[in-house]
Length: 124
Image 1 (cartoon, rainbow, N blue to C red):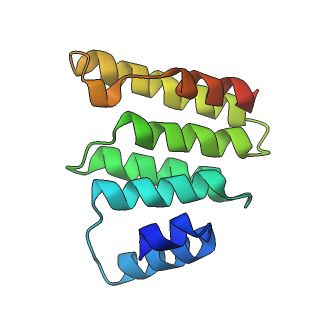
Image 2: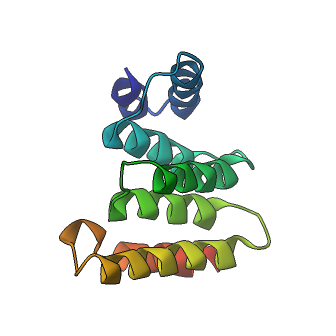
């Protein structure tokens, strides 16, 4: 259902279902996180970027490891944010991705792409 709402361009429905999943204590998968973060990246709500950042931090504390796509969605959310600190926050996410890529012995799933750098530049 999350993916269907996302494909229909209904991020509010994705986020409501995400909230329902949390209330029901349904454990998210990497795919679930991806859809939620991508929905937040497309949202124009002022809380979207901080919420995406919080979800990424939650992932980092779990046994699920975010991929470059997850980091990219958070950077994209910051690039759309009107927060005056959004550029620095997007850059910090990029730095974390670069660090994780280096620590992973260059795992392809964590390799930064031009889109990651573009998101940070767009945030400025």
